[in-house]
Image (cartoon, rainbow over the protein chains, first blue to last red):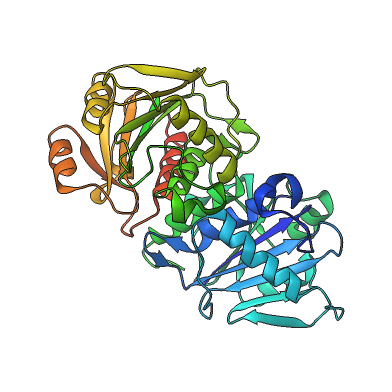
Amino acid sequence: MRTFIIKANEAHTRADFRLNDLPGTSGRIDLLCRVLNSAFLLSHGFRKNVRVWLLLYGPPNPPKAIRFEGPKLKVRLNPDERSTAKLIMKVLKAGEDLREPGKEIEVYPGLYVSNRTFEDVIRLTVKNSALYYLHEDGKPIGELSFPQNVAFVLGDHKGLSREDEAFLDNIAERVSVGRKSYLASHVVTYVNIFLDSLPNPP
Amino acid sequence: MRTFIIKANEAHTRADFRLNDLPGTSGRIDLLCRVLNSAFLLSHGFRKNVRVWLLLYGPPNPPKAIRFEGPKLKVRLNPDERSTAKLIMKVLKAGEDLREPGKEIEVYPGLYVSNRTFEDVIRLTVKNSALYYLHEDGKPIGELSFPQNVAFVLGDHKGLSREDEAFLDNIAERVSVGRKSYLASHVVTYVNIFLDSLPNPP
């Protein structure tokens, strides 16, 4: 199982944005749509062994955690941004009245929303997965060996805060896909194709 | 210099599609937008050493060739699909009345439209670049050594036709990024990051 966890510092936590201007009105939900595309889609296929956590920290009600659970996911993910953004809108609407910190609503089969924090999700994830923080200063991905359950943490276009990085430092290994600073969705694409090439891919 | 050439069999050759439904109305111009994102964008940066040829073969006036010339490109490419699709619309409008097969219009600095065919563009490209056809049955990308000028040909979601493949067979080496069938934009992302890792990247 491959888990991708992305913290989106400005992504709106209510469906108050416009599909016609995602970059300008949603706190960069468009970036999250591209990450989902990279995480799940193959040419005419879908990766069932992937889980994605979107951690939205923008206005007005942070945090919102949206979980896409590949093995159970029934809703169709299309490659284009707009249809994925529509889906995220529906999930945010379903989670609007959520107050309990620990409760998770299953909006569609395999698609969940909750008020879980970044730290909650990391703590949950390390119980079953080896944790990696994707960072340009990390160890080259080709030099690591990966177990069957792996989880990768990414920042958005602003990156993770120092506090987030300090929290991760003791529990996640820093890993790099290259010396340049790449878009989050490109990093996810690269990690997926790289893992596919291993003798026993996670 | 890195050149990416993508043949889009159904992509509309007139700006007659709706930005609100790119997958349903444009013959998959959304796919081309994602390829441009993958070819050119870094996190807060732009790859100047990249050229992209989009070869549009859909209705009503095929073919249209759109060339994005990284070293000269002045127009800003944003990561989202919609703004890139708007740009493609403007280019198609500028090329609407083009009749001459060999004439190329510079719509914006570094951004051109013409009626060149797939074969025209391939012939032009092999004059200065080593040509590769990205295909899942090709030689693994890690086993090749690349010169400084490289060009990669990709099909869209339908792939290249047998005629196109026969034309390429004698002049392009088949190269693969993995054993699965990946989305065109993911292949471009992978190739870019892979090339970055070489001692003397093209």
